[in-house]
Length: 396
Image (cartoon, rainbow, N blue to C red; front, side, top):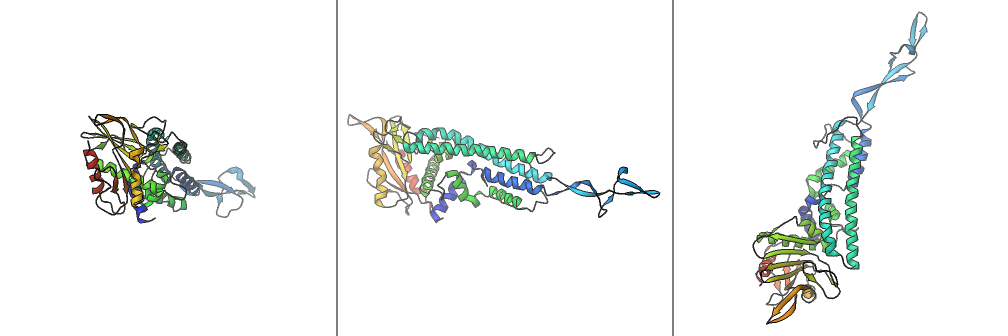
């Protein structure tokens, strides 16, 4: 990973930590638990043993049963001896520790699944409407199925652990002492350590959460989501608080509503606008399709103003100026009166966000219709995005 990718992954993984089944995906955890149970089957009981019959007296005692003796002269001699053999049973403490690991992972998956299902419904509405959108909706459905399957895997693992002992087991987070010195338990201990230090596995966590391609997480996607996170932080600094957790919406698509002083603020995340499709947040297109990454809707008594911020990793003038295209493409419900004449309203500004190495925004014209906001993850400076936000909020 280069410095840009490292910065993106670390910060996004940290911001999304509450959504993750930290440490390991359920199937991997379940496989290690199964291996740990096999290892515990080889542990001799510290309190129980069995008496097994033997035909030779080596390391054995005479049988206590009368019918295991035969007469010999005036007395009786044993023909069967007994040996003491250890009973192999899974110790209680390691089993209860395994239950605690499974329970912690299960709670995280349940939280993640609940948030995902809630956010997915809106994401489907935002992303659907075209062949490309249909593929994205299928991916969202597949991700939900994976989460549901993971939940079921953990439930089965819990049943296996509970069935490994005749005792009533209670999950205990404290590590057993002595701790089993076996490969599966060593791997589980490492997963537990990573669960308390999520940045140690940041790339793996981000890859799971952001559903990147098989060869890794798509960098442009990470940058786009990171810019959304910084925009939400800038809004918070300006006194606007999200009404719900914004992270699922930033990751999946949807609308983030904010409480705060006037004007009223809504942030649309990656709405897929398709000709003939119902408007999303009041936005639509007449022809083809278009997907601005972020559209900030500012509502006042005089109507709504819409400002697009579209992240890109391109830093050339041509690449930055290409983000002004939404001024012509995206339309807003309602008419705009200009000198007594009604016009179909469009977005008011359309800016790029890019990893530029500068501390000021880069407007392309004196009206501020388009330009570039420096958002550099490697050396982040919050002033440009704050300046852009203050500018667009002041427009009337």
